[in-house]
Image (cartoon, helix red, strand yellow):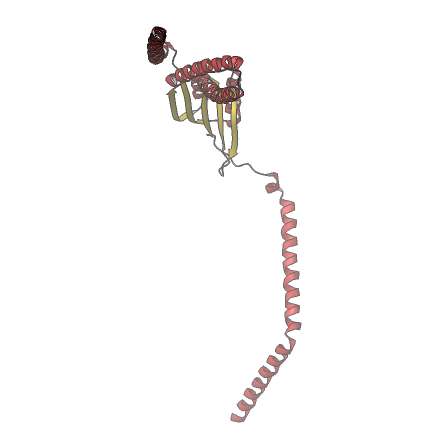
Length: 297
């Protein structure tokens, strides 16, 4: 009997010890979960704060860069001028374009009904020589009819594109790094898709950057040239050839006579029955008239 009581007491003690250990483990697990959860929440909060701080710093950096960057302006000009001799003026413009390191985009020459020559020329010259080229072109003209110069400031747009490009390249580097350490196929596919999208965006931004750099490094100038010289009608040698004109007129008159005679013959022969009938009727009428006149006498 004593043995049974002792055995039960030992079993009860073991159960109590196990229960205490289990409760302690559960509490430790809860504490661990709470710690991990708070750690994750802290990590997420910290990451968000870092992103916000980075974004704020990036915006401030862009403002500083815009303020410090040399202004990028797209200049365009339209000139309408009168020139004494179109060919000479056009040649001078082409020489100055080559002198300043520019190039001709388009050149059209046409003639008006009044025999005056006109031309439209579109050129691009380096931005640093924009004003010099305009001044030289105006000096070449006999009269400036119209001058229109416009400028578009694209500094902020350019800085924004550069900032976006830098961010996209950073994302590209991270994705490439993730791809090196990825082991699962689905992770590789996901990273590859994200990488392709980022690289496409990088190409688009690079294209816009190059376009702005080209537009700001070269200025576009459209020039309309109108010739202002007096047109004197010239006397053609053919107008002075009297003998040739006389022969031509003689042949023309002879042909007219032949044509008229031929037409008369055709008319008479072709209408002979009618003419014979008319002659007979007229003859009878005259004969009757004369006969009646004699009878009255």
